[in-house]
Length: 263
Image (cartoon, rainbow, N blue to C red; front, side, top):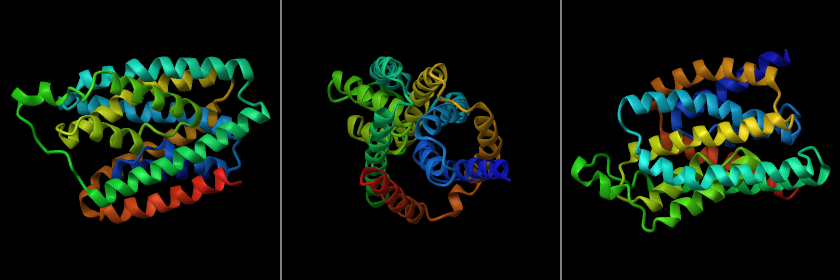
């Protein structure tokens, strides 16, 4: 019966991701911890590989449509991948199942959920700020950040956050990209956010697997549910009040984050 629950959880998260573009980590990790009693380090490690597999398919689709600004992806990866490696090295030395490490991961997860809730609410209120299209002649200029070091710095922050909590590459990443690249069309911002998250979550997930922090049978059940969920959600995306859904989700994530921070 619990196996069916995991499949349904994967379907639910996949459906929400397909419907709103909200990062799966901000939903899946709290579900695994609160509703299924999975230990934080196992929930985070398993969810990282879950995110890598689900976002890889989205990256392939967007790359075929030539929506991915690879220059932006490379700048973010230059900061996020090394930061993830350093974080994994620290976890390897102290042990991810150590009670003190568990408390740090739980507290950091709570902060990440609160940040994600704030970013999601910001997008729900402000709406789509970036232009929908852009002439190719100006695309090169639009992919230049305000300063070359900013994407690397923010990439490092998000890389550390994602490796510790599996949260941050979704709503937080999109918000950061909208600030760093204000002239980039929204479709390309979303494509960049999904594309750079694939190598980051894969590196972080495999690192957690080497530490024994991945539940492989659980991962299979979650993926079995998420794939049809994403398919269904992506087909209903134009028939739902996105701002209302994002606002409700932001309140739920704020509640979950507060519970973790003040537990």
